[in-house]
Image (cartoon, rainbow, N blue to C red; front, side):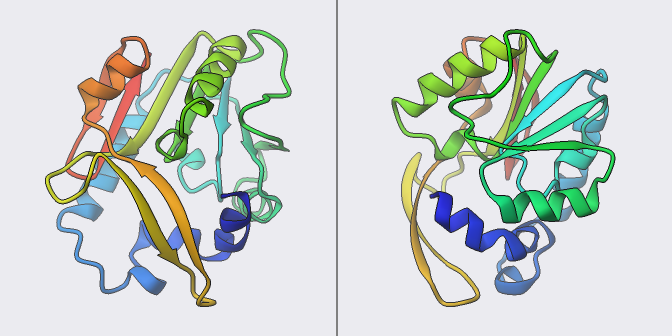
Length: 195
């Protein structure tokens, strides 16, 4: 997985923008829902936030407050730093957060939690709760046209093929799995839960 995201970095934002390999993908309502999710995130109370698996910073830029971005991919972090020069970025493993207890007010993560298998999910939740009292998870919505859990074959522009573990969530299911919380967003493409 780490090697995949390192190589995917230059084309990662294509997924959001519907460009590159995603140009012909049929995603009805995608742009409107992306805008609605963005408004939801921007409306959160500003907080000292750790964005875990921040990637290129595409979502990071919409988080209110003092932000630190963390990712394991140097390529992702270089792209994020170019976009967001006022954000601190740290290269580290999300399952061993290099911060003391309660270093942040909020841990935020988008499209990372759904890639974690057991026991990594448990480890991540323990680490997130150790460094902040609040957790916000944004991930892919469970719909009729996807399985709850999939091994997806993903192809990059260079033609390389990767097997990626992916889970999809109903908002109430994600909330329960995270130990309770409130749904911030529930749409066709995305869910967001705050605990």
